[in-house]
Image (cartoon, rainbow over all chains, first blue to last red; front, side):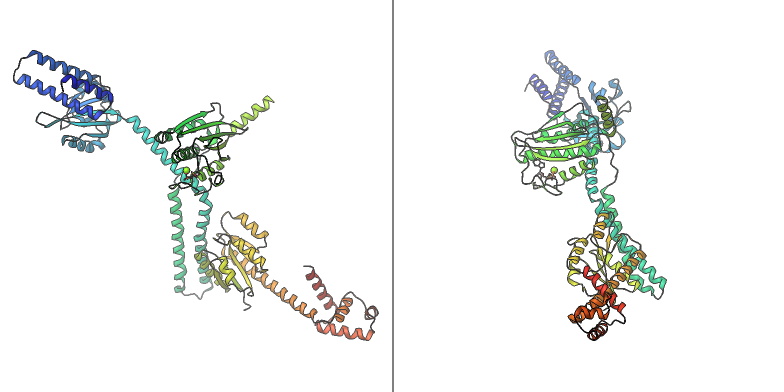
Length: 432
Length: 205
Ligand SMILES: Nc1ncnc2c1ncn2[C@@H]1O[C@H](COP(=O)(O)OP(=O)(O)O)[C@@H](O)[C@H]1O
Ligand SMILES: [Mg+2]
């Protein structure tokens, strides 16, 4: 392979985006250039043309690296930064190369990440190519998350003499990830909560059992003690019962406490379209994985509804997920989920989730909202039951039907928020 | 045998035991059952007392048991124990003839008072039932002629009027009348009148 060929290939690979392959090539090239330079000067071979050629190549290579939008840098085994491109300078908030070149990379690694960073350095210098993340504190004290693709650079004798790293800022990505994770936790909490709402009466009843037993045993003891003629020994058994029942009560409470941490739901005037969009952000990935297109047909002029956004998100999420699952399971050739929002009568907004799956069997359509009803092998059968209880708690209704040309259509309504309803009433009375 | 018994039906054994322990303090006999079915299978309807019944139970609920007992004309008074938020069930139970209900967790004296009242009510009912049976037996001991005489006497007719109406001699009516008084164990005509009124009242039931 000649140098130009190498360069071309390198450029193609960089453009093609295969970072690790590019790194390796880059390493090889840099190495070759340096070796050549060294040989040239060592042997004092004054073949101008060769030197020119080499310098020209190095120049071209540097141009590519200089103009590379990602940070490219070389580090020594002790962490000294040997070289860094302009993108790299910008990344660490350096004004000129001298701010960072010749200095320790550890000066920009957050203290809590230094140990793992050292370990990664050690592995690269032991010959591994790695991808690692770390928290950086830049020269201007900006905190940022970085991701580095690192590979060892070897000299002609195969000794590793530097780490070549391509680094980019993944702070935004990290934040989005964190937000998604928090959101998932919140959804899970709501799922628990609404299940809990259904269980609340049951729990009150359950708790009442040990409490009344405790009261009865204790009152029985007091009465006997008051009327005298009772030996202390006779009290042991009922008191042991009291203890056992107290433990039973606290077990129930522990269970409940584990179940919900935050408990109050928050009904606020909300934009349904915004809720739908928020959900789609979180389900899009899954949908795309299953070659499903999610299309939104949102009425932009909807009044606000009174809703706990996170709960309604949970409902939409359940319905979209069911739609995707149905189409995947039936291996539907065309996979589309269409979400409509529209006004519904005077006081409500309707959300409709339609799919191009197999639809719902008429024989079971009356059961789909039942708890634990599922036709899926791995199904739990709580999705629609929870959704229904959420919607009904909001004063709305949810229905399922099969569309004329196949798929399932799930619809639910939400009440307009009070102010909106009043405004509307006033407007209506003005008009009439 | 005549001592009243408190029958406890609760699927929660700890609660049943605690009720037993509490009710023992007022020296009432207690029998506990862990399900409505066990009660139906094992209880002796001839025993006086009352039933303390948990509304919510798996299988046959307290309300179901109440229905079954009514269908079998077993009139034991029922005190329902209801849980938190079971108001509707309590209302249904009372409409269906329950004696009373207490909401868990309840005051011990309150429950014991209600149990005593239910037992008193039951024993009153049983006394009345016994009187009724006795009276029925007394009436059943009369001949048709004696019954005719009795009916007329309690309507305030004189011996003579009865004699005329039945085409008997006054002497014969006198004999029938003495026989009726004796068989009915009545000391006066007004006793007879009371008995007849009671009989009429029950026959209307
Ligand atoms: N979009 C849909 N298309 C076809 N069937 C559906 C759809 N949504 C729900 N169902 C049916 O309703 C059942 C219950 O749904 P759900 O309550 O979410 O429980 P799960 O998803 O765990 O089965 C599903 O198992 C499926 O049979
Ligand atoms: Mg589901």
